[in-house]
Each structure stands twice: as structure tokens, then as C-alpha cells.
Amino acid sequence: MVFAIPVQVVALLPDGSALVEMDRDRCRVSLVLVDDVGVGDYVIVHVGHAICRLDPEEAERMLRLFSEFDPE
Image (cartoon, rainbow, N blue to C red; front, side, top):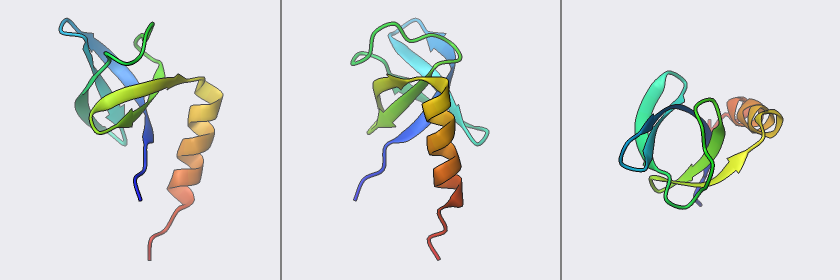
């Protein structure tokens, strides 16, 4: 099973990628598959690529659900 996680864009980089943050961890993702992404937007990331943009309410709802998941 594969999870695609919502993350927030914290910086746009000049090479068509972005710096995103989740739980204070940051990483670089490609934006080549999604148009009109800006700082503060939420995107779904899968295998290092943003695959869609989410509205903030949906992203927050998904993050709350993920935080309730306990794999033990």
C-alpha cells in the first residue's frame, strides 16, 4: 500500500521544484505535474512529485485523520 501525504509548500525554487514541510520536516519535491502552486498551498506528494493541489480545509482534514492513525 502507498500513502500520498498532504504537505504545505514553504518555498518555490527556481528549478520548478518546491520546499515542502510536514511535521517540521522539509524536503524538495517536483512541481512539474501541478500548475499554479504557491507558498502556503497544500499539495499531495507521491514519489517526490506533487500530484495535485488541495484546498486548505481538505488538507487539514486529511492531516487530522492521519494523525489519528496508530500502526500499533
